[in-house]
Length: 146
Image (cartoon, rainbow, N blue to C red; front, side):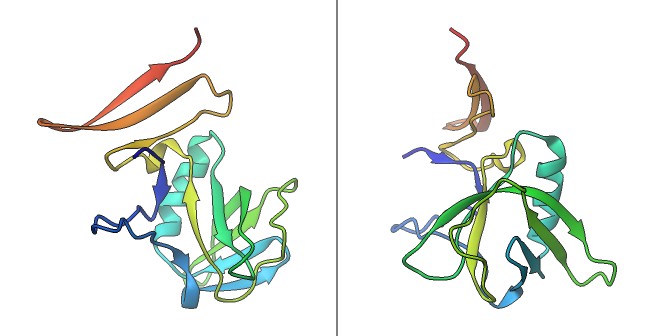
């Protein structure tokens, strides 16, 4: 099955278990920001700088209410102890994030790294996909401009 490019990736176990960031490595800073002590945020920071609209999908407070938010900024903290992630001003998570929430980053070209993943540009006109072939992984750009 195809999956929107994400990090962490879905597990390669037979059940394709979803992997998450957060848990004990995250604390809520405000209604629209998180402090994450996880090196994967450096990849997310680069993905955000590439442009194209990095998003987070997560369970911000309760396990029965998920939400998607667009990321506004990711900054390394001055103490070197992690990253501050701020939601975009127009992002509405549904509930403010809580300490220990779980989430993952998605839909950034830089996150395209596993078989069957795809990316949708903000204009929706092109979607690079990662295909598994007998020669290994190949990235292809499919232009849907019609």
